[in-house]
Length: 368
Ligand code: OSB
Ligand code: MG
Image (cartoon, rainbow, N blue to C red):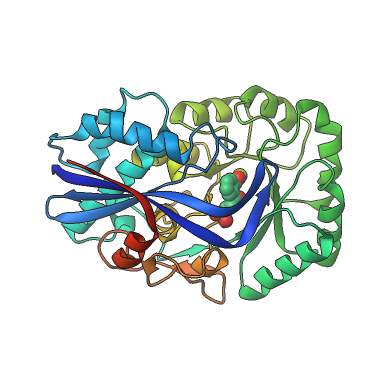
């Protein structure tokens, strides 16, 4: 395979409702899309970097720069037999995983299309249906949170995750638990606490949460290991796990008992598969996180979630939770049982709406 052309586009789309986490509020998304033409087919990828460097150091603008100036030159004119070879070709660039993952995942889609197989099968996925949960942002009042939870449960979602931060943690969790004693419930702090908050976080223990996601610093494996020793509730790491080496360290240190996998955060499928295999070997459950993706990133998340080790419901939900109109056809939908069924079309299994994407684009670069 050889890449003829890569087109970068930035599209802007307004979320159906603002999404608030401990690190900020998002209303309008800026999304970098990759269209890669290789061997007569076109693969699509999405960069999951945020608008600002608040979830991770990468942003839409850093990813654009790195793709154009450093990653594309490493692939330009190169022959490769499979997308699985790309991770190594991109290795000279340190970090910038979200930029790498966007490009690499587009070529996995292209390879699957070239072979005429669904991407999830090419990856070795084993599920024809994945379990879907939701991530609910911070809400101004408990009543609004309760209404959001009720709505998602009646839509069928299998697990509820709520965002927390200091001052908006113990009470909402206690009240939700009282109201819903038997749902799968978890919290995500996005690094809002410090190790000294361990006694405070222990106040969540009576509510038998499935897990507490990323309570401490985005780069703090040591702190999470110390915290996990003081908590019965499993810690799940998100921000901290950006490579196979991080996953290995986290498991060895007992810094977590569960891992949230994000394709962009670990740098694409080759890295995600390696982290997945390591977790499986250590019986560490994995689930697929979300980054408020458009349909293209969402389709990749669905494919990834079919791997054997993804044994817990993820944050991959229906298009309509995010967008008035998604950029893929059909949109992502959930069944009444809170699952997403896989398609058997070649590649990501959803068709990008080219006209709409072109209309939403505010910036474009064609790399040849
Ligand atoms: O921490 O999982 C996170 C959104 C943006 C950045 C980080 C996170 C999230 C979410 C939303 O929790 C997941 C989704 O619904 O896409
Ligand atoms: Mg998270």
